[in-house]
Image (cartoon, rainbow, N blue to C red; front, side, top):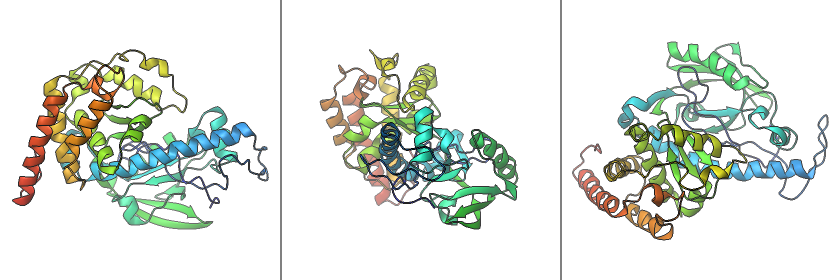
Length: 363
């Protein structure tokens, strides 16, 4: 196992039962490295010398991964506990993410290898809490060796090629026999599938206070992560963005391609923020759609075990701090604050009544 620090990285989505290796949460996971911010580590045997630029690139990846980890952790119960409500978007997933050094471009590829210890082989970068992978004992840092006896690929195309190995196995059975390496020892695990909402959960590398839904993905910017003061507040953002996907709003508003382009851009380590000039091409969400997303979002949060009492206060604070006149902010894309707050308060009371009456939390 690699030494101390890194413990985090951008990863692909959760393993689905068909083709994609990782199809529900695109977030970083954890690895380990012996570096310290601002300190250039000594050269490892057989690897290039660590330059200041390489160390800085590794530090950038580590900071991103800290934000990814928070987002991934908060999203986990929202995805798993709401599979029943996801209908068109629920899938059988294995619940872990994995990557190798080739995930990262240019200097970040080299930094991932030399400084952070990522190699040719896919390595588990995160395990979704409550998933089959977590119950089976899969851990961050485990290296993926084989699936059902078939050796898993290494190198630049390992992620897509591994998906081609997993797909046929998962189409025939409800669990995946997985061989991993941990601390130099080989282990065999059986990973049961997990039914979950199969939305990719992305971190946007931008400081605008916003979140985006393109029908299949949920992106929350680092600016929004900084604004949310606790897990419940960030859960409100993730749940409401999931709700827009579940209700098909990007498609009905013909915003899917525009929002998809923004998500594609902001997932880059160094995105082109000029795409956010003006409105970014995103039309403001109609009142009826926003109210519907708020109503469903409250249920998603409640079913996942988060507190719902602070929801309206959070959205009021957000609108007051970043009003609709601030372009590329959340309120600019969702300006109907008064109607939204009324819908949230009404739904919170409704959910509390159902809890008291021990009725199912279904909208």
